[in-house]
Length: 204
Ligand SMILES: [Mg+2]
Ligand SMILES: [Zn+2]
Image 1 (cartoon, protein in one colour):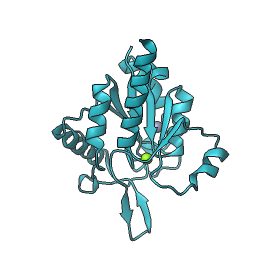
Image 2: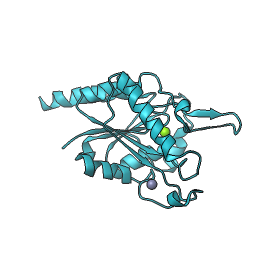
Image 3: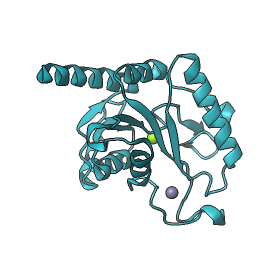
Image 4: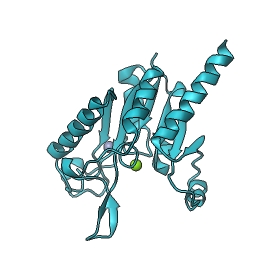
């Protein structure tokens, strides 16, 4: 069986986009807004060198909300894979949930089994790619990522790039217990590399 590093997309692989008109941050809505975060390619190369599959697991309710089209989402995926590919960083598969229970676009308006914190995308990936979830990691910057990983039985790593601790009460409240908290995907790569080498040592 394969082992995988599951990666949330927005805030982990690419930067969120600040919208001054509404005063909030959101997912990029087109390829021009899609920018890789620093050291993401290097982190993914570390995961591949350790023998993991790399699988993106991302909620994109902007489709259900009519904020952008599936064509633009595909274009963003293309840009992501190409930009990482230039750095020798391979993503093996990408899964999106495009639904939202209150979406404006009827085809995508539903309560689905794939929208994180539900584990549907992880379970589907496990089946399609023959992944041992218990030997895999979910790395994300949201509480829903931690909860989805816990529900699927993966190890969990929360990226939280601030020393401010306002996320802890919310983690508690939602009963999310990330095994590890790191500041960036690069730090997550260093952590998992260290865990893998101690695992190898234990096995002799
Ligand atoms: Mg995120
Ligand atoms: Zn869904």
